[in-house]
Image: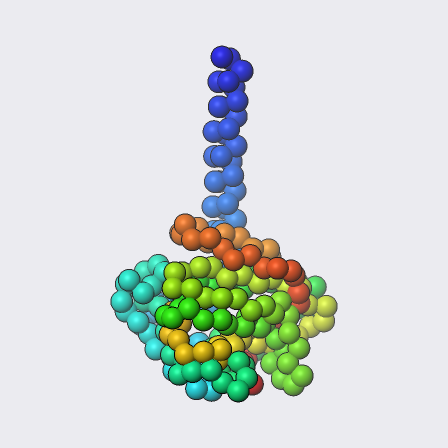
Length: 209
């Protein structure tokens, strides 16, 4: 009986410790994305290129947290999936520093479900990719994550989503980009879609592909 009680106490202490560490880590990161929750009345500095239309929805049911979210209407598939995209465009240019680990995480859902390509990249030809991955976006919010460490300084850099896989409306919310490894979002029960591997990337002035 005594052994069981000790185990129960240890289990409670461990759970408390993990909760405290997770909360501290989430509070400790510095989000480099401005207006990542889209609660400032607009969606700038997010931009689009190609046949995709951005808007701000104020339907709370369509937001992951808060009341607002970014929407992107894609009219149909393109000759190439990279012919339309969503980008974060904040001036001045942001650089992926050499040897620094970065994480890009965001919540997204789609109606109907559709595939997207996540591509942190060099913002000019030859558009070198860092942490690139394709994911399937469903009609329920999920968190998509990629991490990378660039072997060289990336200037200019771009955080780009290629979206012209098919006709759909995307909903995006709670965008984070920060130095360091992935830290779980602290205000959701949604499961993160973990990165399959690590690569190098930087985020900055975004140019249409």
